[in-house]
Image (tube, rainbow, N blue to C red; front, side):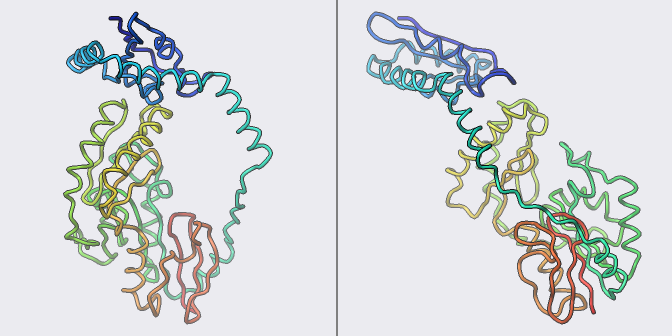
Length: 365
């Protein structure tokens, strides 16, 4: 009995069809006298996710490879024919010419029907300055990653620049200002970077938070008794994909798990992230969790943890700022994230201060 065993090089990064590794597809043509042969394919090959009729294997795991070869050589003729039919159907249908026609058709469709991109209005600087100067009380909320500092692949590298800390310190010294910084980072980093300033902090997207005048190191929590046993299910899945995707790592936080692929091949990392999300959606379907595709990461966290809840608590506990609980949307930011000028009850005014997830200044008339 003959066997087609192939461990092709990774697909080209440019100038070729994504995911169309022809070397493995050509090996499908291995026949023997009493029926078709079997394809044993490296799971790192570009066509591994497409050729479902193959026996996929990690070529660096010798025991797993030996088992796969044994299974391939001992398959019944019926199963070999079924696997061959799946391979032949896919290779015959998804040819290079079919991919080219599909690509050109989609390209023409985009040119003929360009996406409707909303024009983000310029921030009315004069209105903001006027409101800031005349306000007796101000609430300033800023996002951390991507706003106060550049997004970094490792949490330890996201240290704020001296000019940023000086600006925050200056704003915090004004007794009229109540300043909050929101972040997805762990509280130990937020304490280390900004804990010495009179700044309210929200870490892990609001799971941990503290008011500007709270003692150092004293934090409040959204759902302190949240069940985190789900991590025992999610971590092995993330570990499986981390071992198979160079340049990725897992970040474990108190309320969430995140799989980062900043330093991986951008195409392969995004592909693996999508594959992992699909797998986890099946496993976690009945749990109160949400799977979020962020900027070069996949994060799993409780559905009840988000920044808007922290903002509601901030506004609710500050009667000098607002007179009644606000709506869920952040002040000065529309549902689409577009800055806007908003009127609040009691003659109050909300103006955006920075274009972040949730940023605003609230002033009393």
